[in-house]
Image 1: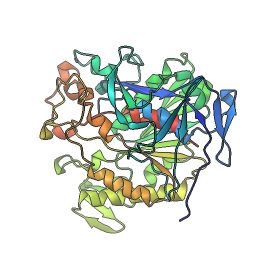
Image 2 (image 1 turned 60 degrees about the vertical axis):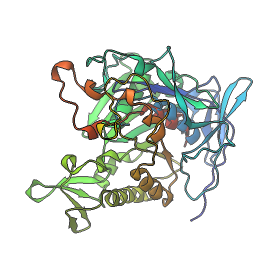
Image 3 (image 1 turned 90 degrees about the vertical axis):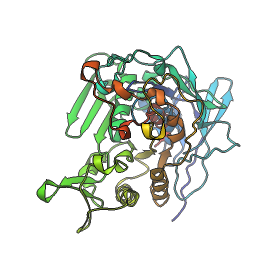
Amino acid sequence: MSKRRFDVAHIPVTHALMERHITCHVNFFIASSTHKGFLLTGESHFTSRSTLASMARPKPDQFLLVLFCFTSSSLCFYHGMSWQVAQEEDGMSWRLDEEDSEVDIVQTRHDPSRSCNFESGKWVYDQSYPLYDSNCPYLSTAVTCQKNGRPDSDYEKWRWQPHGCSIPRFDALKFLGKMRRKRIMLVGDSIMRNQWESLVCLVQGVIPTGHKKVNYNGPSMAFHALDFESSIEFTWAPLLVELKKGAGNKRILHLDLIEENARYWRNVDVLVFDSAHWWTHSDQWSSWDYYMEKQTVFQSMNRMVAYQKGLTTWARWIDLNLDPRKTRVIFRSMSPRHNRENGWKCYNQRQPLAFSSHQHVPEPLVVLKEVLRKMSFPVYLQDITAMSALRRDGHPSVYRRAISHRLDNKPAAFLLTVAIGAFLGYLISGMRC
């Protein structure tokens, strides 16, 4: 397999979207700056432009920065490439520092030679947060924790502070300008839907009534910023591969079929995927009765083997159907669980953890990295596992429902962490397409 290398020029900060998720929405930010916009030509170079209208596809480093910031604070549900930051007289600038590799994957390892690693840092209290109104009409009930009776609001005021650098606040208009004439699609489970809600709430406030709309089409929903001819979309596909009803109304998970879901992913500029938690549910909460591969039905299978097979089907579709010159693909890692089983009970938690005493690499992340390494298409992995592990205070816990409709907080398996915002901000601001 030939190695792929991108020619990267110096990139000005363009959007810092940070932290404010939904489900007990916490904040997001997308790196932004007063610098001019930029454009990627066919030779993968960046070209400055004085107007937003002339911009082409967002670059990966720009998109990743914004999406990172965005993810860094969206907390209240579940929930690498290293970046180098340089200070200039006119402000902060970003440069993607990428090595030759068969697959361009966002690495999670920290390189001491780099001045800023977004995945290494701490949560800092910021009185100026949150970044959007909790009355945003696009927030689902499960994420409006205060409306559901949560008495405190400090969980909204924590922002992610990487070691060695600072991230500017989110600027909705600049973000929309960078995404002009672009389709952004988030694909996955309820966590990804929360990210969609958060991102939409971050930008919708600067768009006048009558200049924005939301469309629903089967498993998809799309927010349209009409003046910018851009859309932020979400498509439900928690397992990525197809789940169908079979004989006797039994649910069959087809490990080698994906087109029913993938048909929505075509002609999109930026695709953001997640898929892990649904694969790890216990038998009691499993979404399927049998596995099927080709013509063989399996009553049982090691879940990580099944996950690897499903991801391989997804990877094959991406390799065969998408053009990396036109579409950027990001995959978000899973967050650790905050539940009764490991003692991380989320109810009544008021502050982030200073450090995690449960640091480990989840098995699905190991499987995901292995699948990505074998792909020819350059997929960017956003690893938010360690960051989200610190935000047990951001989990909706019992506040997923209003007091009058609240049920016992079961099952514990659903008590999952939620640092969602950081991922999206990182991605949107850093992607170069």
